[in-house]
Amino acid sequence: MNTTALATLSICAYLASTLLIIRHFDRSRMHRAALYLAWIAVCTHLLYTAIVFHQNGGFNFSFFSTSSLVAMIVALLLLIAALNKPVEKLGIAIFPIAAGMLAMDLNFADKTQLLAHYDWSMSTHILTSIIAFSLLNIAALQAILLAIQDQQLKSHPPKRFIQSLPPLQTMESLLFQMLGAGIVFLTISLISGFLFIEDLFAQHLVHKTVLSILAWIIFTGLLIGRSRYGWRGQTAIRWTLIGFVLLLLAYFGSKFVLELILHRSGG
Image 1: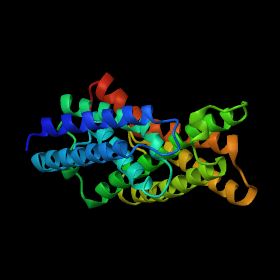
Image 2 (image 1 turned 90 degrees about the vertical axis):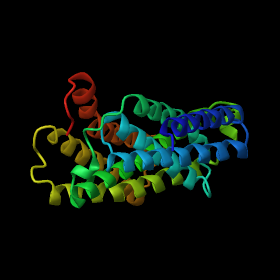
Image 3 (image 1 turned 180 degrees about the horizontal axis):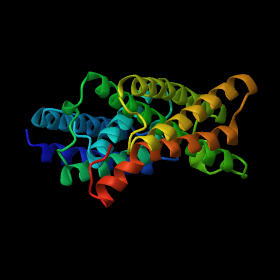
Image 4 (image 1 turned 30 degrees about the vertical axis):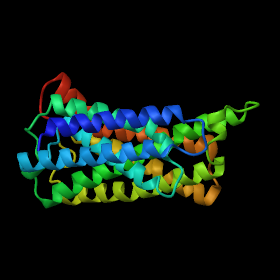
């Protein structure tokens, strides 16, 4: 099957879904066509990834390929969550990013970093890291939307699209559910890293390790603070975003510098 055609179809479906979400953003119920298009986009993106995996004999973990894979997982998790939670409007940010990363992967693929080169223990570490980042990515976007909603509700009257969102308490509850799921996978990722990586503090890994641990401490502390002290609102938003920025730098900071600026293989 032609991978270029699949990727092009996925990109067009992502962008069409985004346009429909924008068009119906201030309504309480999202247009069904937007979700159908998003499912088409994710399914074709997944099929593209599977075919490339088969052709290469493993996952490609270069910068753009990893970004495309993460974006696809984020979009898929969002659509699954949208089956019973009101989070589909986050697609306004997630879907165009997924389209952009897929386009970059299609045009700038680097086949030098394949998952087939790693054993099962390292593969477990890498895949749980990607899932953790994907879940916490959605949590960060939810925090941004929550911040906008909180600010708008203080104005009189709030804008229509804010009125179309679920109540603030529901939005906060969704945020902490996403954080909880993300922390589970981040914990597995860190534990597998300590158990299976021979020199976790080797060159190109030390900053990833430190930043990931700091992010884990922030997210875990936030959940504990929510449970014991009732942390919410701006406190939850602020620390969620700080934790995610640390994780973003840990996962993609060195890859960007090493592969795209220094033109060297990332760790």
